[in-house]
Image (cartoon, rainbow, N blue to C red; front, side):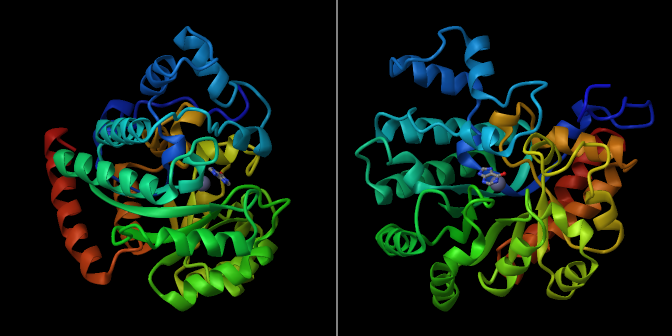
Length: 360
Ligand code: HPA
Ligand code: ZN
């Protein structure tokens, strides 16, 4: 069996087609890692970019290479910034990405993006980009009947804490009423969380947004502790190393700080050595708050559906285990309690019709 692959699907597991149709919740997803490959290819051709002109080679070039050994920095290097020539490109790729969420029946998503990703190689204005993504995403989501909120990502390898503060203040010139969180992403090995304390002190003091930190993905739990103690993390991206730290697990339980874990991503980045033994199962069984997410489907060449399948097959879970996990995941969201209650009721209705449809 290829390293990292899930076990053979046995007859007792629901098919991928059924899981594709299951209503899903996702709180850890990067817009920049969500572009449907066909739409990205179309945009690259329109913009006359210097990229392979056949789609299969194009796909291979911009995704994490199949059968490559896990590699965090190689994974991060796949986020290219040369795609965009205009604000219409940003709108186009956002539209196609949000439309694709409907294909796998995402019910609620907190979609994150880094405004500076779109401006670094263009002369676009970060506020205009932020506005364009939110408006395009909202209007597509409304048509589809999808619930969406946004998280603004700041990249630790690109900006210092003071530069982040500057960008954060600048972004307040856009309408941020649909934004629920601030995220710290990028290379946590070379840029540990303590470097960003002044920025997150400010975000915390403002009280307008919740805080989500990528931590303990490819490091030990020190980065998770610091994210909680110094960056005021409300949620942790990945936090895979928490499996080795029972004291931390107790704190996560007490404070109800969720780990958003991503089986495929965690294998490709080297956060965990293979998919079948991913620690999510043990963490969930010991009561640590965990939610399942996809991270970057385009780069990984796999959907949230595939992460659900891997959990079902490898952990011997069934559809109800995933439904239970999703119901708990409402508490991982950055919504108000009132919004959570309302959406949970709606989610239960959509689960009911999903189950009826497939006679489950
Ligand atoms: N880790 C850190 N930064 C990221 C990731 C990740 O897995 N995905 C996108 N940006
Ligand atoms: Zn991420």
